[in-house]
Length: 320
Ligand code: AVJ
Figure 1 (tube, rainbow, N blue to C red):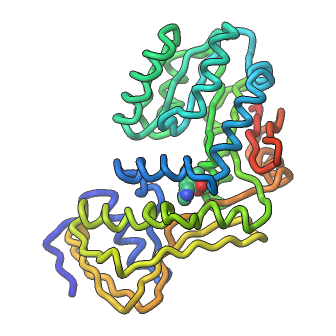
Figure 2 (cartoon, protein in one colour):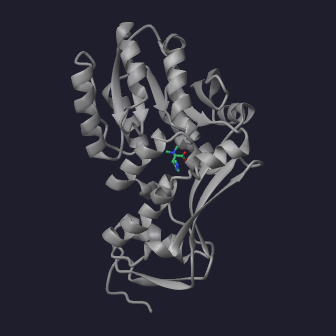
Figure 3 (cartoon, rainbow, N blue to C red):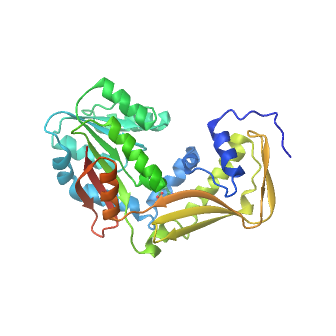
């Protein structure tokens, strides 16, 4: 049954319609992060199986001195963080840089204004001497605006293996675009999860307590609430996979039975077969040589790899 009385006004509705109309259905993981999704992601970062956050935390704690030496241009610099979130790991660097009296300002970038305000209030409390300027824009717009504002060298942080959510093609075009808005002398520090024992990786996305499951299912709840959908949460199952060749962790929601779902905001009804998958997220893992390839292909020169004691994760520093 198709009704056209509702126009697809929001980007969210358009993207959902595109994904659920495709022969192989998908939903974009960028929509995981509503207020509840943000909270569940905090729980994911705290769970023992999700080693990524712990590794990056260890790298920053153990190597903050080397990181500062490697990025410090010796003059004032602008530290820009793409997708700053709650700045949990970044605070280690900020604290250390301030202690060492590095001359820098901090520019957190996020599309969520709420997240930025909370972060700024917290940082102002904690580090009153640090100048924080929120950039509430999409990444590239934020960088263009910053270029107009100030021409101090930039150090761009892109942490937490967020690059993993991109296909290799999109990762490449993302770094190419980033390279274009950077100036010679600017630097980029990307946190990237590395290929390793597949059991370890799959566990991180398939925790026994079901936190990752609820993270995925939350998107159905969000569609019910924001798009007037009628997903029955109990009729869906979380199914994660890991392919050690490609390094791709993928998560799917599986329809537990043949069912129809109607979404008011798209004005359409979608049919699901029994055991039909909906692809939700890619979390891609890389090897160091693949990272070096990617840097070279996108116009960067690799300056240094900062890895944790188990070589699970890297913060890779690139020069433009
Ligand atoms: C925030 C994209 C890095 O892919 O590891 C965690 C999101 N998804 N557990 C990741 C996520 C399921 C996370 N990133």
